[in-house]
Length: 364
Image (cartoon, rainbow, N blue to C red; front, side):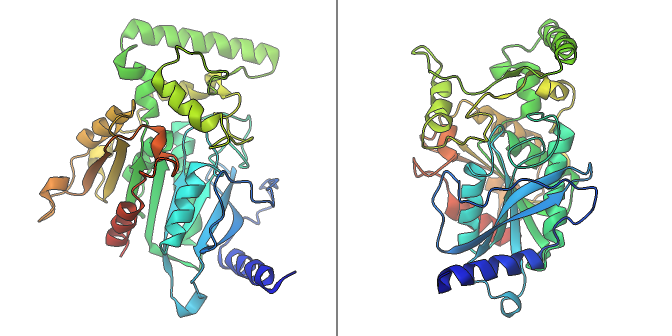
């Protein structure tokens, strides 16, 4: 082992000792890969290790932890921290890990975690979703960071990407320990399941048809003993596919963003996996969020209206000199950017400087 590798391993061991990982006997033993299998290169400016923690349902979650390379323990004091997850159907080796690593380069302890039923995290059956449990996953990440000796528990923020942007806003409405929230290229999973895209299925009759179809699928799944899958990004891509489907394909189905554990890169979610979103609205209490929220979306994203809807729901607090931001909420539109452009650095449009400034201003 080289001196450099020894130092890296030693720092990773210190990170693990400094953060209280799960030791409860009733927790599962997760099978975590030891190799760097991310869709982005490892930064030499950060230290990295795997950690686990559990949510209040006893599901063990797997995360990649990134710590600034310049951090020297007690000599530096405790650092602000950020928990990241998303997109919906992705894993921590994709966008969320990239965001977390960038935040660590900028001085934050950052974790990118796989939600319940996804990736390397626990939970059975696989590829399920829940507005409650997936919101809880963010709260569990805050539990973990609040008990990490590297972290100042009064300076914790979260980032939700795509479908986990909606979960992040919901978490911010529920947990005042979250001092600042970023939702990037957000989907409101309740809204899209209830209404369809652009309210194309927004009638009682259409919703009833969805309920009937999901109920029939539950019966069939129980009979067969398996869960039918759907929702992975279509491949091969039809020539007449909508442009946003082509946008997804360019990320999930190519070397740019493909990952073997990602549902979107492979066979999707269970058909009944999103059933509960039909009558559990994520943004029901968004108007009572008192902590700062930054919504980021691409100008050309098909999903832009989700962030605009969330921004309209949040009332914000009156802050002197910040009227253009409407108090504690802000909507940043990236000119020319699509939905997937905010997944990675290919288009060079992710506003890392803005995100860094937002958290440094609000995690003091």
